[in-house]
Image 1 (tube, rainbow, N blue to C red):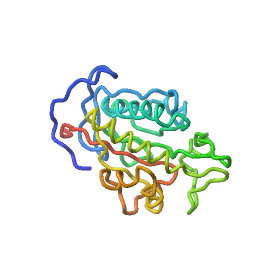
Image 2 (image 1 turned 180 degrees about the vertical axis):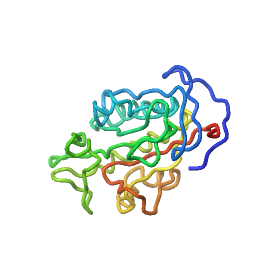
Image 3 (image 1 turned 120 degrees about the vertical axis):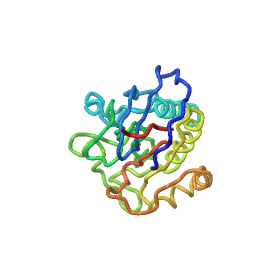
Image 4 (image 1 turned 45 degrees about the vertical axis):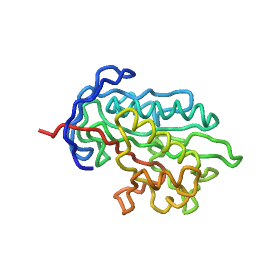
Length: 224
């Protein structure tokens, strides 16, 4: 994502003082980042360990977009449950093993899944599967008795797009397994997402099947 010139923006009341990002997701830092809530009515973080290690900080405008989207889903899709993944450190900077997540504008979301009975469940994460990141879905988007809930995924991205536009942190791009995009675009929100959200179509260094990576677009200062 190209670096945007810094422009003054309003405070974000839900998260206190406004954040200031520098550089890009691939090379940057952040001031006054905020930590995402560890859990909510319909969501939780991927790992309590990750939360305690400070790996879930974001720009305040991004945090507002993320939490507002979950709040909207709690009303419009109350039976669905979600898990978010890693975001970044409180001050940004290199964030191994990720190649981005450096300036508070990147958030990983674990794919929503349903079980064999069609019930929405949270993607299982533990130390043995790197808190979900080592899970591999097959060509039919299945893992054991779970399958990706593309309808829920589409609703989440739609809600995130809407809340991001209101909070000043619209979606810049989404990285998700290209082979699964036809399934996503076949959902209720698919036509909207195809028109209004940018998806990376080429091959990336890590297969994004168990999570979808979102880079948000917020005006940042140049990195010095």
